[in-house]
Image (cartoon, rainbow, N blue to C red; front, side, top):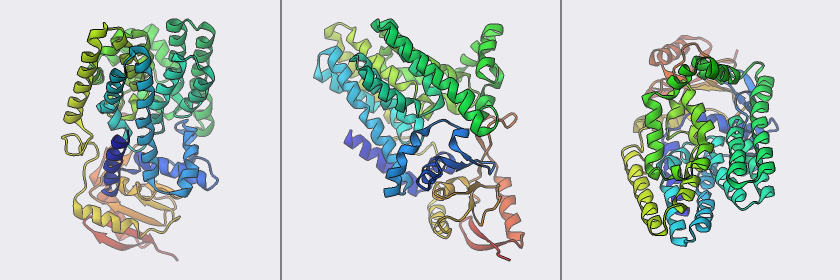
Length: 465
């Protein structure tokens, strides 16, 4: 676990220093945590320039727990390091669960290694940072506690899980049904299911609308199948073909295949526990954004723990003589996939997600961001924004609002698009012409003074009158 964490942290640190992360999403989390340390819990700036609490977008108050640590070490790498370490600690409940059900420390150790070798875990752990990713190890501990009938410990774990995201109540609810149907704990199982469902309903229908001023902006991702939770349910009964079509694309099938093959499909031997992943898989499959069915992204947080735990219980159902070979095959497949897709240093997929800016561009960005005073309202392009978000007001170019400084990297053309934008294929787009026009406009404006230019990176300061 220590070696796994150290290698991934080194990879993330290198990516951060090379400006391969962006304002979206690392900078968003940094600003929310920094604001909490300043007495403004979870305050952040939307891509449109409005200042809101993060609860207007995602209900993930677990970020508040990062504030004391961030006050001691105010670095974005703190958030990344905690996420990686938390995911690594998920190997412990996998080991304990396997040791109990397989009665073999050797098999348990191999399964814990399989968890760490599972390529999509490493990818999402190194995708700094998403609060919902913390649900992966928390769910594994929750399964372990339920398997041990330790309800109080489970309840504490469930509270933390709920705090990682508004949709995490659904797999919690499904886990409660598993506890009832697979373990015969009807009263406790139904109570867990009711509480999990109630949390998601409260978060989506009350908390987000209260802070956002209207319904969740992410409903637009499901426009083709109803555009809201009740709309999706209505479509399920009135036009089930539309649901089937949304879930049966080639992208969805490849997604399921990518999740399954590294585990050799062994989770199918424990179908009831594997089925707990269905709510998250359905939410991902019905979404119109491609990232939802990218196995290397954070959307698999409500999937991985149940496939892994079900694989453990599935192997336990094999004859004793076939268990070690099955576990060894899973480990070999996971390692093979990791070699093919990353994110480990030196493998083909390692640098593919974010791209690597050229060396001169990185050096220019490093020089540019240090020119911006701490606390000053700033507008910046995406990758520069990952280093400038620990402040009250941050604007994503081309939004300016009351920015006093602007950092523009003309070779970083990505701009955010707010959820709900018509015909929005993803959560952002590349628009080099817009970035270029924006920088030209500032150069020609008498309200701004260019104080730095190198390798396509420009810094402007507002002229005081």
